[in-house]
Picture 1 (cartoon, rainbow, N blue to C red):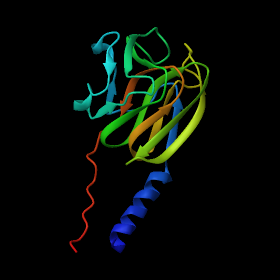
Picture 2: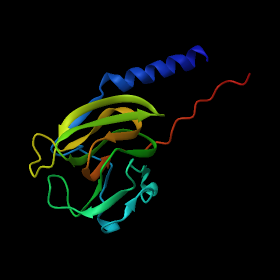
Picture 3: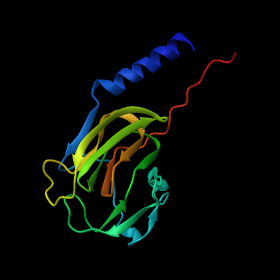
Length: 178
């Protein structure tokens, strides 16, 4: 590892933590590059890689695939939402610096983790529940840091309207030849 590469990695780490902000609000991102809903899939559709062309895939939860369902007019949700009873991941096919989504669960706590190459960058745990009221916040996510995965640890939930910034191809680290 050269001194220049080590300095670049350290600078990247400092930039990731300097203005990292967990998101918990009533609207998500101020100006998302992409907003992804699930209306076009119909009810009962397992969701995994249908959105690869938009730069992301979903992992199965411990209890099975994420599936769509017709959603009531919960705060931040319209048409169809993802539903399941366990943890899941949103894996971007590159890196992003911001992402948020409408999310509700059975009353309890939910943990939201941002990861970069499998290593936690930031996380937070908050009380979540089903609610028709968008305040104090049914939108959750991250802003101001670089990550490629969001992991959600929760009980039964609904999720809709994933917003995210532009997906950037992962940087390739070139090392000098030995």
